[in-house]
Length: 94
Image 1 (cartoon, rainbow, N blue to C red):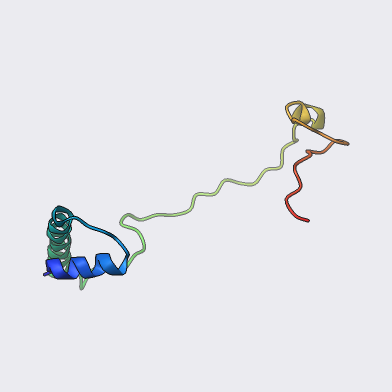
Image 2: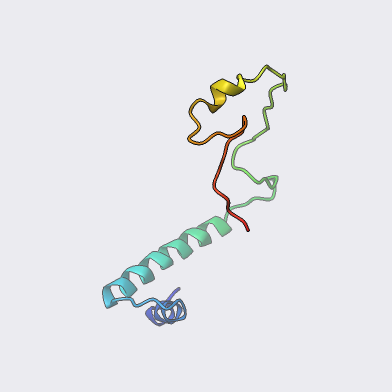
């Protein structure tokens, strides 16, 4: 069980200023979380295979089929500052 003093200590370490009402609220909420975790600890998981996801997942890949790209003039039509058939962008490095 989490006490008010522990909540205040953690808040102090995190450089948080909590009102007395917030300390009360967070103490209650943290205790509810710990109670829920305790209930989960009581579950029998001996026959449950460990997984990374709650539901079975698999990657679905489509076949990579090359297709013709858009014409360069059409692609650059909306570019704000094209130059020599390329996108011109602001310099970000020296």
